[in-house]
Image 1 (cartoon, rainbow, N blue to C red):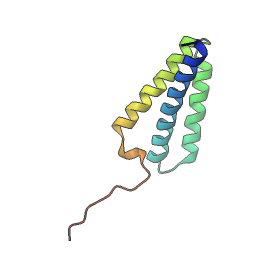
Image 2: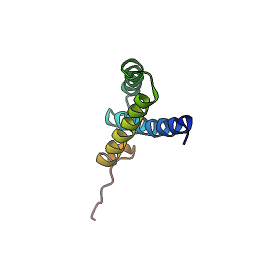
Image 3: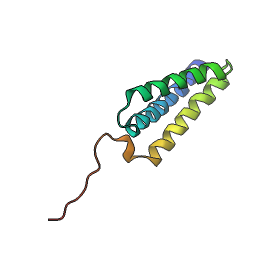
Image 4: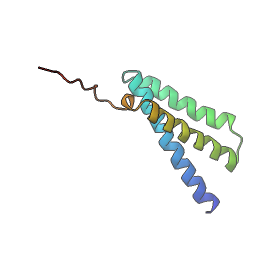
Length: 91
C-alpha cells in the first residue's frame, strides 16, 4: 500500500472516530451545538498545534481518534441515539 493510500485509510478511520465522539458529546449535552463546535475546534487546534509534521505522527493521531470513537460507541451505545429510551408498560 502506498503512503498516500494508507494516509487516506487512517484519515478515514480517524474521521469516523471523531464524528462518533462529537455525536456522543452533542447528545450528552442535550443538543448543544455550541459545545460540539467548540470541541471540534479544539480537536483541530490540538492536532495542528501539538502534532509534529510527518506521516507517522498524523497516523497515530487519526488511529487514536478511531480507537476513542470505538470505545465511546461500545461504552455508550444508547447515548449515541437521539431517540428517548423505550419503556414497556404493563397494563
